[in-house]
Image (cartoon, rainbow, N blue to C red; front, side):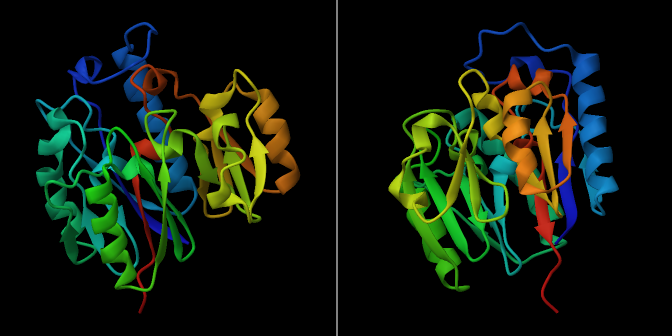
Length: 257
């Protein structure tokens, strides 16, 4: 169970962040309203949420998931693959240190948390434009000291691994067609997002609920037989900046006693 989350309010320079999207610029009022709804959703599911203030000069900083990988035993502070984002991690040191001992990814390794998918004691680590093999191997080594197993996956499509692959419970992965036949997930059931609904692959499993972006009815219909309550949240202003539901928080499980 997750007991805590760390988020960050988008700053006034949010629209200046990195994006590959051809969509219109984000509406700042709506961006903030959607972030507030996200925080309220996490709180409704039993999490205590730390909301950090904007980080001036770092327009992508609300995507806090990229700054760390957190397990029960340790928080691994990342080194984001985009040079303009690497300064974000320093402001995460104090919030993370209040909950976990810290480890760090060191250069020449780079690593974005959006490339890291945890399923129990198993990790899938995406090697992408943002996470290089040096960073992936460093993370694998740190996690192995705490008994976790890792599998590296080349990310050939999408910004991050979790743009295309997420665990939705019941031994099932929600995937885009690009990952449907990947051998690394051969022992999982797979739900494939229909064409045109690939963005819905970034669905978040949280304390027995599935939080998915609104506006993807075909994917929702495929998820419904899993038997978990589904919460839909509007993430239109985050999609414009290549972001999604998992990107907006670092989720912390209840520490081991």
